[in-house]
Length: 297
Image (tube, rainbow, N blue to C red; front, top):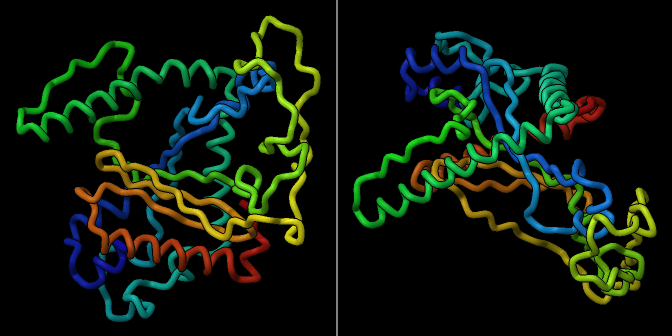
């Protein structure tokens, strides 16, 4: 998108020169439930909704570009007016950058103090949300924005001048938590026919251990021939926070899906559609070609 705007003259050379030198920062949620007490998980805690997340930050090098500050007519452009993906980044470089993100996330989650760090950052998150909520209410009433003092334990580790490219999250293989065919067979963890502890609170951690550890095998599924009800499509509705630009993805029934949540007061719908189309074309270029499929993320 930036290449296209620069090549058609919408982006001043000074701003282009600044943007092309900056590293790209990304952030998103991390599921902490697998790191919590195993006994609590076996007694039902792992099925709790909207519980125990932290946030990650990762950084990639500057934006790839085939040129510097020149806008020569000789710069190759695709039908949309930007340099083709093959000129911006090779497949090898694409997978290498994916590995860079993966290594950063591994370092974060393999830190022996990962849970302590997540707990220590909670006051910061709560202070951010309090500022957003009070400012939003003040704007609705036409009042001046309140100045909320930052508690010592809520000091933000992210510099004030840090601008994230966007938020990212993958929910992984959705079919494991949202089966397509129903009724679910007995033994499936989501089936109403699967026996569960009678205690609605799943007992106390001081009680004896759960009778059976969780299975690592994929859950049983209902075949197409035996299905009485089949989900053919589903949609996620996520409320956007102020200034948010959040890209999510998940795999379901063998297909990769993308969805985006954004603050309409900050971003235009046209720009968002252009961004999503760029993501779609990039996925087809790097993951759809036979040569790219040999890479590993």
